[in-house]
Amino acid sequence: MTGWMLVAVAALLLAAAGWAWRTGALHGAAGADDSRAGVWAERAEAAQSALDGAFWDAKRGLYNNAAPCILQMCTDPFNYWWMAHAADVLTDGYERTGEAKYAERLASLYDGLLARNAEVWPNDYYDDMAWMGLAWLRAFDATGETRYKEAALTLWGDIRGGWNDEAGGGIAWRKAQTDYKNTPANAPSAILAARLYERFQNPEDLSWAKRIYEWESRTLVDPDTGFVWDGINRTGDGAIDKAWQFSYNQGVYIGAAVELYRATKDEAYLASARRTADAAAAVLAGGPAGMLPSEGDGDGALFKGVFVRYLGELIEADGASSGQAKLLLANASSLWTDGQATGRPEGDSDGEIEGDAKGNGLFGPAWSQPPETVVGLSADLSGVMLLETVARLERAGLLK
Image 1 (cartoon, rainbow, N blue to C red):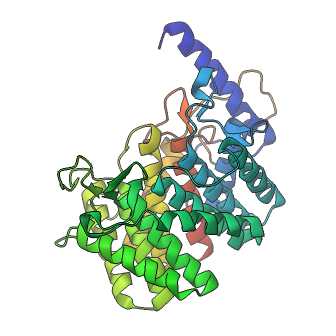
Image 2: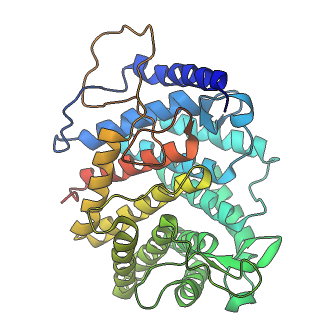
């Protein structure tokens, strides 16, 4: 990037972040106190405000890909699966507060997504559709909006068509490559099937959840450790991508096991989720209170957010996962103290800043340092997911 572009980008980022500062949603001063009652809910709300102010495009009813929004970085490409996680984050905010602004933004995003996707929900990628189905099912649970349930059911009907006998079963990654199966397509689909069963008690959904989970377990989970591999037969040679050690693969497998435990009360599923959580902490973070690594920009920046969401689900279901809670707290504390973008907009003289934030509430792919000048939506969503997960555990009294 040329020098003049860097200057322009910096100026635009400050302007984008200014919305959150001027609303008073963000708080900035040294001396963060993680033990203060309700502190994580406060921080989650601040991060949600920054996300909305920096990324939301009211004209399109979608979030921009980056802040500041320059050239084609705003809208191209259309990151369908990022928008699914944006819907999930809005549902987090609504569940935490019950405030109408989150429900209204969900409705706008729903309309914007349909308009952008040719007025249909399915696309060519089964993993994308699983993420979107999960998001709208959660939104239905939170709001009772029937159209969200209908979107989830439509997507689930398409996803089931991705199952075939290549590699012994499993759902394909995409419609144009039916012999490649991976965790991102299968584990979220198992979560979706199990949740649909829990909501609507259709026994076929539970059968599907078990079928997908069992294929995933025997094909893409290390039998010695419980660590989850990425995929099989990506290059047509039947090989398993064991070197692709991604956090979101661990998260969605944990999530599938937890949902099947909730649906069946079979303790074996919970034990499997614990085992994978322990393996993930050891491999990715070096221990139960370590830092999760950056997994790059773009799609990779969303991976940790997915992981922490479903690790939080395990803690809620287990009730005694102190090691996992320590991991989340360590990462959340680092994110809040060291991981925010910095810089108060020039000309903003609204007075002293209250609270304990040290930046403008936007986050990058590394949770131990500020992001680059341009902040990606995927990375920021991951940071908000972490804060919302910790706030949820805070409310439940599970941060021990």
